[in-house]
Image (cartoon, rainbow, N blue to C red):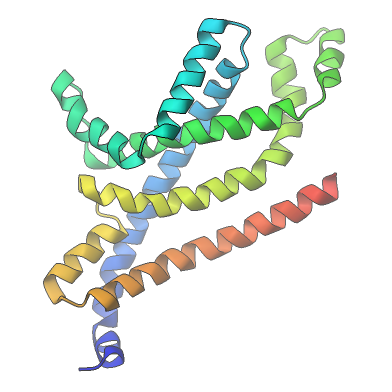
Amino acid sequence: MNFWTVMVDRFPYFASLLLKGAAMTVAVAAGALVLALVLGLVIALLRMSRSRLLSGFAYIYTEFLRGTPALAQLFVIYFGLPDIGIELRPVEAAIVGLGINGSAYLSEVYRAGIQAIHRGQFEAAFSLGMTPIGSMRYIVLPQAVRMMLPPITNFSITLLKDTALVSVVAVPEIMFYARNLVTETFQSMHVYLLAAAIYLAMTIPMSRLVAYLERTRRAWQ
């Protein structure tokens, strides 16, 4: 059987399993993104703290996570933490691992966005009697978000693709089903091309969103 005959004959079966994995891929990516967004903001604020202890901790945290492979971090969380009594299910470990890894990158996005706001904005907020937290929440962050949206969306695309890593900790996402299908059918070319097409179908709309946000940001400026 030639390539296209196999693809047509097996497409419904391959697609049904891979799309099942796609649902898990989106769920893991969404959970990790939420964790990365929240934790990344905390780390960015610690990094900009006047406390040398807090800023030093944030610096080490960021450099360590950006300087080590995400796969190694997943292994430590899933296989290593049980040694100290902390057991996570595969999906939980995947979300925590990718979320913590992503927070290191997003903390730099947050920091760049916040530092791009003119210092006068802070001073104006303080002159109105606002607290540092209030000025950050109501004055600085709403303006910084406009500049941070494109890189955050770009990060989301990378995160979605990075979910392919979590199959190594038995999370049933796209690549998990793809490897099982290859083992079952020996049709590696067909399966992996279809898996790539599914990733492409999810990332292209996000890429278009990044382009739109970039144009919008230039219009705001």
